[in-house]
Amino acid sequence: MAKYLFCFLSLVLLASCDTTTVSSEYKSTPNGSWDKDDIKEFQITELDSTQHYDIFINLRNDEKYAYSNIFLIAELEYPNGASVKDTLEYEMTLPDGQWLGKGSGSIKESKLWYKENIVLPVKGVYNLKIAHAMRKNGRVEGIVDLEGITDVGYKIEKHQ
Image (tube, rainbow, N blue to C red):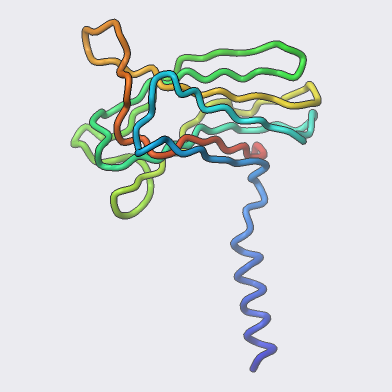
């Protein structure tokens, strides 16, 4: 009986392994509020310079998030000093207000496309910087404290 239980648990562990994920990390926001000057920075190392990757920005939000979309500024700095900076917009809800992220309870997790089928050809440390660029309609100044974003992160997967 113990032998069968061991085999079953081994199969469950093998099936739950995510072989496509190369790197992933989250950073929390203080008190579930993301300050406009709080740039989340991640160092990414040990990537295969011949492999194709998909890069995602991951956000966790709670019910305090008051908007149906989010604007982000993402910058990927290469080890050789080059960088690519993008202003991105993502939908966070359906038109009826239902969250697009996954999860149960008050926390939803959104996996947002950033770079698809990209090769990172330079060996060394890459830096990914993510900041929010939210503002109210008709306003020039940005929202200082963006309530409801609890965690900001990234995930790199091998391109399938």
